[in-house]
Image 1 (cartoon, rainbow, N blue to C red):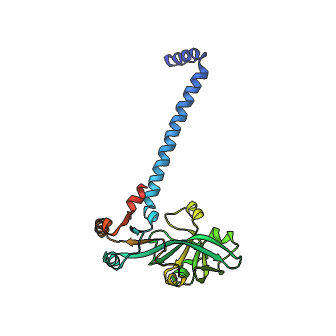
Image 2: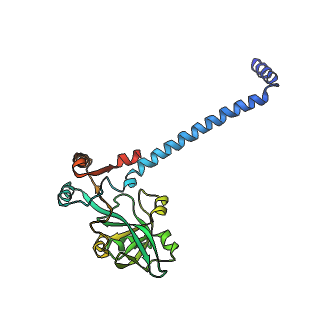
Image 3: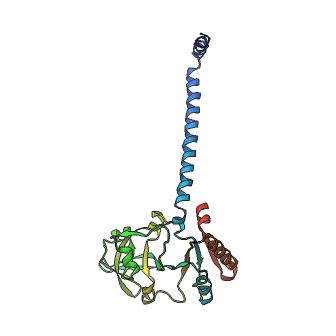
Length: 245
């Protein structure tokens, strides 16, 4: 009875302020809902990054330099006892003979089986394997569509024509915005010298990627590489740093 009387009095006294009461109550409900939604989104994002953290880099450790690795640096990198991949990246023109057109692209050459986590996605299904066998190049899917080209066509890189063995769709740790700004073309390292593009005046970025099975060896390699940062003028990137970014 007391509760009924209390609620009755409260309802009667609220007659003049029910609009403001509704607004106030709605604000509280919406605020709580927003906090729950933001908290849930943040937790899901953190869990997603944790699960896919290694795919953000594609490796456990990366060394990058603006100068080609010399013999002493190669010896040091090879001595770390891990699975390694070397990558050279530079800009060049890609020619499409069929349409007599050309486009500035980012050429990437690879040795080793990078990425170690995640996978390069390309069509058809055997495209990446054909690339590893040095049978041809992988070209950005959107770029092929732009110039009305397709898998099996030939493109010109530097001084040589090469077959397009696959349409590149995705690379671990990168997004479509990057691909739009700088379309990627993956070129087997075995073909690089024949293109005639790499000379003393070439501007390129050089990377070495590592995969470790033993966390202790990873930590030791990271410490060794960090000690040589100034001497060799290279950068060192890890999965933890990429997760923070």
